[in-house]
Amino acid sequence: MRYIKTKIVALILLCSTITFAQQTPAKKQTKTIAITGATAHIGNGNVIDHSLIIFENGKITTVVDATVAKIDLTGMDIIDAKGKHVYPGFIIPNTALGLVEIDAVRATDDDREVGDYNPHIRSVIAYNTESKVVESMRPNGVLIGQITPRGSRIAGSSSIVQFDAWNWEDAIIKADDGIHMNWPNNFSRGRWWLGEDPGLKPNKKYTKQVTELQDYINQSKAYNNGNKSIKNLPLEAMQGLFNGSKRLYINVDDEKGITDAINFCKENTIKSMVIVGGREAYKIAKFVKQNNVPVLLQRVHLRPSNTDDDYDLPFKLAKILVDEGVLVALEGTGQMERMNARNLPFYAGTTVAYGLTKEQALQLITLNTAKILGIDAKYGSLTEGKNATLFISEGDALDMRTNILTHAFIDGREISLESHQTKLWKRYSEKYKTQD
Image (cartoon, rainbow, N blue to C red; front, side):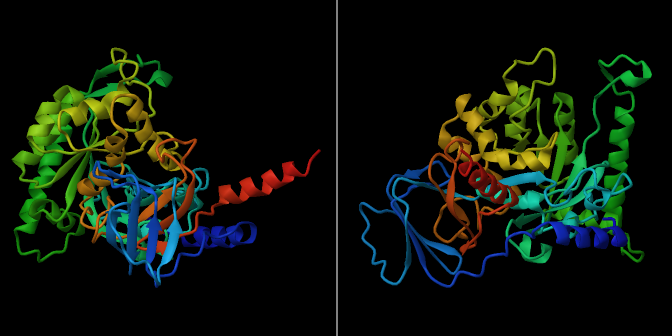
């Protein structure tokens, strides 16, 4: 990633004089906490109406129905959550959160690198834990994210972080979990500003671009099977795709592109791949399922892309794929993606209006995401033995009217729900209260 030291130092000094830093990260859990009476949405499809959840040393130790289990809570900090709801922390995959703060200020923009093939670029070292945008995720229950680079054919490596940390080293849950590839487009649009027809037309370079990808894979295999006498960081970074230690996330939307990408991975013995975007995955859902390929589905709140698409296709895509047995989670790339990442639970809520149950929709942003990212052993559900990353809401967390958090925990640490936005809301609500 770029290091523009002078500009960054100047920006930090400027911001320190006119703004407040992010909330101080919470201290390690020291006392056992019990949440009583809440409706617990486990994240795996199950619900406990009157639950008792206990966690200590950052781990969930008990998740039971409080009406049938009798447990001595002496010495614990007790949170009475009767009438409220408790959820696993939501997870936003494939996000540039923390890599760009202000689009118009170049010194705060570090989400991509020059060059076409950058598998060795680690996005996490540019991740800004002091980001006000990241801070604003937490009041909606979005507590974990996969920080992902943008641009170029192979954009780089992502890492998974939690959203309450002093620095990127403290934030890491899983470092360098996968490499992100942008599959060539089968079609392109004319450049209207040059007088070209703005409609879709075949990409005449498609075959050449796929061949170039194949050549790069061949080079990577040859290098990693050789003696490596001359160090090549980009080719060395590809090794994880062949031994299964990294996933290959392929950004591709069209039917032919998805088919070609899956076959490409099979032919090159890439052990684990994920389709990102997948706008036309529903057309070949059975093929996707047969090959056990999960999908990080495009942002739900979009307009249809093609003139012959159903008007509500983006809203019901998740339902179609889930019904076919595809492992689906939701991502949020697109226009103003970092700001809109906080709307992740409401994307899931929209899928309920178009056929999924609330618990199925919840899985799209909790356990399913954790499985796809490879962190489900510790996150994604309210399960004994997993990390206590969860929150309490006054109502339905998938509904923007009722998702009002009262408590949130990351690895058992109770985190602040204050943000720049909440401070402004309190400030101006008090102003208007004093007016006649």
